[in-house]
Image (cartoon, rainbow, N blue to C red; front, side, top):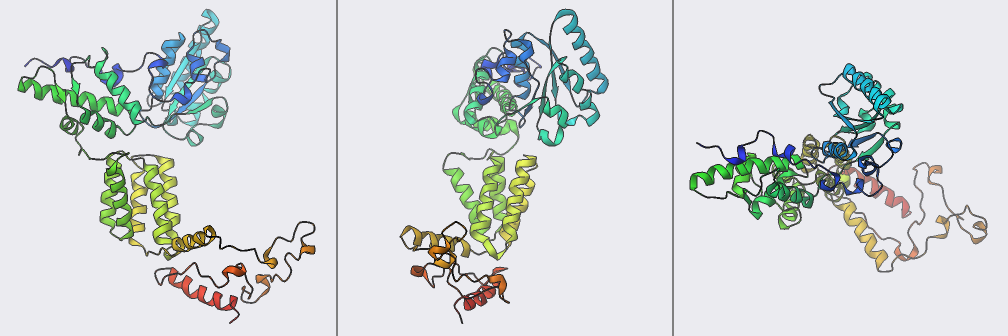
Length: 444
């Protein structure tokens, strides 16, 4: 059987489609404005003395290696690439020595690209310092982990920290279209149907490498099946994409109805205390590439709106999950999201605080707010006492119960009740305590 021309090269599509200049880079436009450090470094006419070392921090597939190689091709500087996975201190010192020789003998500056710098030990990172500080090399380091925790302070202080953002759907679409048409890619030998293109974008989750790898695999599936059917030009379908990436093709549009339907079902399952259903919808969002920060924000809202003081720990756990996702990223971030989801679904529920603030806001919006009682007004500025501010205020800590009978609401709202705790979870104790407090405040 004659191999498909799509399979005629052993070099992955994602590697073949690496930009040869900064003009081809998709996304990261906040780092590619005229005069920016990256653009200046890539300009062969820019003075070498003005170039600074930099650390590129961002999720996988956002273009860290791509930017480094595009700079190397454009700047006409000597380019050396090391991986922290395989390189050691000896390799670093050899690069530094050769860079110093090149500078002194030929006046040529060296760019050292170090991938996955977070894998370097402190001693290995220390070996970089002399070269960076003395200008023997211009370091471009890439990391997917927070440099504040993974890179030593002396190296951080000598480098610019540039944060790469997850590629947008439009960015991924541009890359896919270019890969289909470009001679370095598939050279127009396949047609990607709109549904397949949308599926590849959705499954990429902002990762360019994942998108191009998925396209290459789907094109191979399409070429094999269409060759058997006698079709001249393979058509990549959504089914080809699903088969190629070996995962379910979810119907999920992050800007469409399905997005809102699934998140609505997720929140309502938590509110309804069905942990299994909530985990199901969480899995659908994760697999569809939903922004985990969006999910985490909804968990925080749910903890406040649907659980409240029935379990004060719920908000703490939801916020902790949000922080954890921001700190460790995906896919590990799915674990704290799942923990928070199960906790919120299985704990006691109360919307009393939510209803209370909405009722208070409704009064304020309707004009029901009145003047602050005189004894509660600020008495610290000059002339305040002459106006009677603070007069008659009773300091609650001076009473045995810690509560004294005095008015706190404006006269127009005296006796108004906004917060009505329920007899559920921890709010049952709040209910009993609040009743005692209100009896004291009412002078009973």
